[in-house]
Image 1 (cartoon, rainbow, N blue to C red):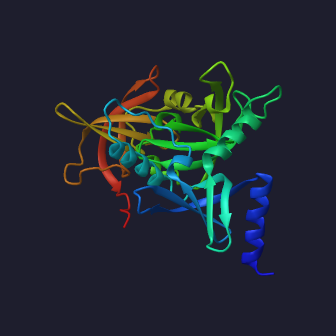
Image 2 (image 1 turned 180 degrees about the vertical axis):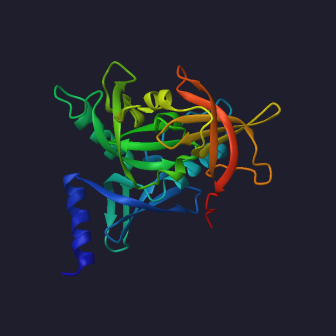
Image 3 (image 1 turned 90 degrees about the vertical axis):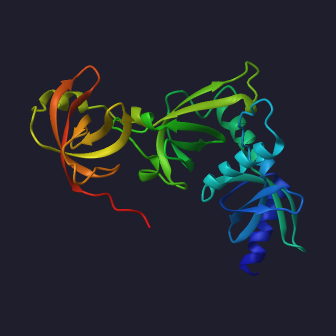
Length: 292
């Protein structure tokens, strides 16, 4: 019996028993009818999941056309390529090699099993390993047991995070703390929602270190965020030791700092209430390596 035959037997058995399988999003498929599907790799076989079966839930503004809505949905699916997802086989045909599945059905079942009932497997405040299914500059999208949550940059770390893509990738598994709640009182699987947080898993030690920081000393720091303000720019930095810093002045005029650069920072004022120090950038010591 060949490996391909073994996989097909696995597919047919899972379809018969309604078992959940797991694969990796490989590419998008554009059908002749204008429909878009996601192709999932499962042990070397391609499984097709129609976009409407991916469990993508996005708000639709009043007056938005079907085309505009589909474009936004496709963009989300593109960001998710490379993510590990669960699915249930709906149809399979060995003769023409077609396999149709639903991620949405798998997610509903996982939510029912793990979040509902007298003894749910997931509780508020629990630390769990979640899948990273999408990453943008400002946020990370995670999935755990059929429920998804977006973690904005401020909840990823106690320090500043300017670009989440520098720290997370689609396909990663990360430890998160979750809060579970239902949007409706009926307790249906589709009503289950979770919030996720990474920052709270570690203690913020920056305040104590900030108190010990000596003013006007030279510190190594990494620029995470640059904002345009009236009269110039504001630089948000992470100092060695985890202290947060903000610079409104930059004396490295000949070598303008950019996001990700390492600089020499001189603290001039400590704002313990806000948990940061305000100072100036003296010079750039290392430029961020540009991705090709």
